[in-house]
Image (cartoon, rainbow, N blue to C red; front, side, top):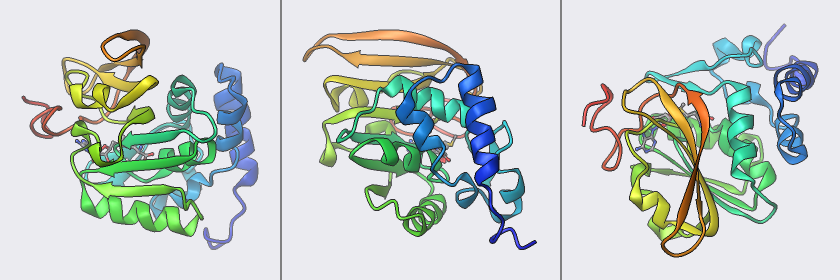
Amino acid sequence: MNPECKDFSKFRAAMVELQLKRRGVKSAVVLAAMGKVRREAFVPRAFRDVAYDDRPLDIGLGQTISQPLVVAMMAEALEVKDGDKILEVGTGSGYAAAVLGEIGGEVFSIERHRALAEKARAALKAEGCDNVHVVVGDGSLGLAAEAPFDAILVTAGGPNVPESLKQQLKIGGRLVIPVGGTRSFQDLLKITRNSETEFTEENLGGVRFVPLVGEEGWKDDSGNF
Ligand code: SAM
């Protein structure tokens, strides 16, 4: 069968039930968004049949679309509400941005690789995600022109929490970011801005992401400063 015509809805429903609900994802809005966004539309054509596998998939240029459970856990930790203005750093395929766009008000997603940004933009447009805007640039510096944000999600691992991202949070805003001393292993941190100068930090556990490469990240893909 032409994979373009295949109906993936039963795979998507099974993913929500078995990979997300059974493993502790509780947020009704996150489960509804993950049950709605067509993951198969964001993966390379050759991987459409395995779009709902319980793992990350290659999207080219050494980058990946994250495992569904990781996308759901991060979205849940962000506590996104209807109307929220959201920044995502690391557009990749555009999938997580589409999920956030289903829950929040407006999403700005920034990607350093122009070729990935262009593909993601096309997929988001084809899926009708009109409230998601893809920008090419260094997301370790955030997106000052659109700040402040209610929620910031970083889907690549940096050596530290970028100060620019903290400063682009609204008071009460949440930042979820993988941070680690090596390029391949990180702790997923949730930073909440309590006041102009006060932030609280929570460690949500170990994760593995590709490196955040930029001014306030690693200096190159090998994970060196
Ligand atoms: N959220 C993506 C999705 O749903 O497909 C997965 C993102 S992938 C794990 C991480 C992405 O972060 C890669 O596409 C990579 O090019 C991008 N990236 C790394 N450093 C970046 C930076 N400083 N600014 C913007 N994007 C960056």
